[in-house]
Length: 263
Image (tube, rainbow, N blue to C red; front, side):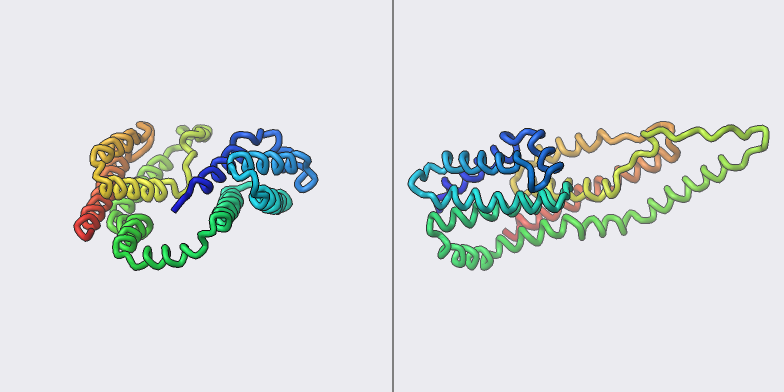
């Protein structure tokens, strides 16, 4: 399947949405929304670049579709006034979907989609790999969480003991409360969960690609994790992280080995 046109249109989109669009244009669009002149300037630049890179100078469907769809998508995003990860992904997905549909139409390849989908869904290889990646993401993380629950409970009990001991002081020992530093208070919500998901996906990918050396580099990078010496239960937390990491790595690696055996 010829994908040269598809790649050129994707390159044009990446260039105009991320490189040739200054921050001042984005801020102007966020401020003035649909009335922003920079919004329409961005649409014109996008259309011109897509037309030039397409190489199909006798085909006016490409610039017409790029101009109209890009204008609609960016106008709706500007009017919505939302600038978060969800809106960003939705915006980019809409642009990419339009480009794919435009490519299929220009190349006349719509008839190949049902055949390709049918062949893909019939392949056991596809479903085995999908099952493996699905398993090592959330389900395996939940299993590991259940398996290490007792150690998390132990850390919580030890922390509560230390807090209670610090509270038993005489009146002459009472001092003004020391404000917590930003480092002590800082903690990313669900960071551990997402780190685990990413590392297991990487481990599975490395095993399937037989890139075992990369697993060693990943483990080395993960070992950089350290706890502050001022924090209570440093040894308990370090051991807990070490156990969780090894279980996570081993489970993902074994899943990859099993998939390779099935393949």
